[in-house]
Length: 564
Ligand SMILES: Nc1ncnc2c1ncn2[C@@H]1O[C@H](COP(=O)(O)OP(=O)(O)OP(=O)(O)O)[C@@H](O)[C@H]1O
Ligand SMILES: [Mg+2]
Image (cartoon, rainbow, N blue to C red; front, side):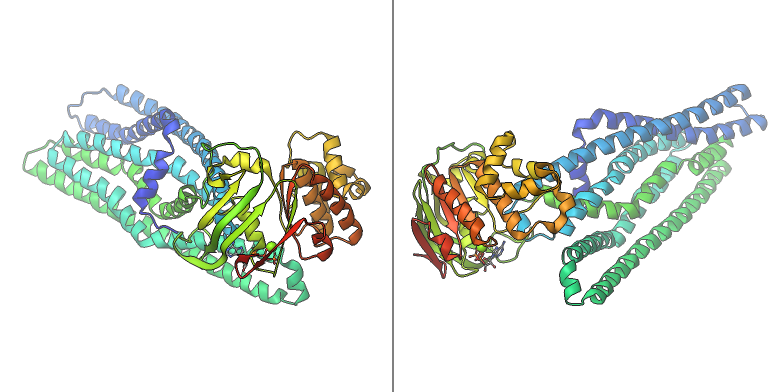
């Protein structure tokens, strides 16, 4: 994972605001006006005191009271409007970022995600993006407001005496910038660690849920629980540390503010003694500084949360900026399917898995100078030991991964030049594991062809020998898969996967162990369907079963990365 500086993260995140610039400016203007109202309520109090003391002031007592009242009401209204505006921006942006993240994930699929910890991804998608709300609603505008506010207040205080203006500037900058910078330096790593740990914990919980039956069977319950407790404890410790430092920060800020208030009083009193300012020049600047730290404190308080936000931003940006292993092709050519072949294909999975793996670090060669031809309207078998690279070859034909050397061609066109949508339309891939979504059986089938009619769905299911089974379910095709949970057997899932492929009706059918979980009766139905499909389709059939292989017109054998 890249560790960007807070500044870079901030710049990238601000860059995303562009479509909402107008609202952002509105929020900042209202926030600034609100803070000025608050400061001037106290300052007007000072004016009133001067008036009582019989000094020359430009406002009458009545006007002062009217102003104070007006400012107080305005302050409340502006504060509310600013917050409403900020949250509007934040939630609009979160929706936008979610969209971008899903888009990025789609691009990274499946190569870069195959090795990724799914729990970690889930925590990026859910809690990290959620955390950015803090950034958009409570970070950007406070920074802008504090800057503008500081300029205005320094000018105001400086109008009594330039030295006092400089002192005010120094106090604002110390409280609003220097201190938060120091704290974010100190806590930066803590925030990151906390996010990573909490991602790990969700990954662990997810993993435990998935492996429930293994855990029970091998009596590892206590073990898992102990590990989970240890992880939770560590996370709690991290959180406590973050909370404690935020407490320290608060205390430090208050001390610094007090120090500068005294410094202002002292400096203005000195100037008064030397005759450089009048009494008003002591009272008003001191009161003004005293009552105007609100906006910079808001900035300083960001220090501790900012570390967290940046860590979250970092993780989101990691996904947004990750370059896919295989880019989607949209400016290529569209072809009609007319056979496929692999020429001198060399392939190895990257040494380290997942997002952090660079393209450079290669692992062991899985395929080494592979040459195969898949002629139209034939069933080509592929056999080979487990782990020899049969599924890998299919994934390369799908362009899920890119070959390191050699060419993969479809209809005499290198697949690197074929539009991805066109390629996916031409190919149906039945993997060794069929995933069913939490939806009805019908919708689970229709992902292969969204506009399929009921007749088409049923025809595909008959070919896959699963129609009768589905009819026996409580609500037939409309039975929700979620309710069935894991009760569908391996063979039932497999046949649903096959039905999807038949429904997709692509000319190039890649079947990875389509019959491994089936009894010979179901196998026979499916083989019969395949034999019929052969008329206008090309089938690549990977199987360990001899009975299945018998229908192949030709069989390739994968061994030690070679195909013969
Ligand atoms: N995403 C991946 N990253 C790294 N290595 C992988 C990845 N997927 C598969 N492999 C490795 O590549 C090798 C070939 O895997 P592949 O799935 O192609 O084998 P297979 O011939 O289909 O085996 P089986 O008959 O058991 O399905 C295996 O050693 C496997 O561990
Ligand atoms: Mg396989």
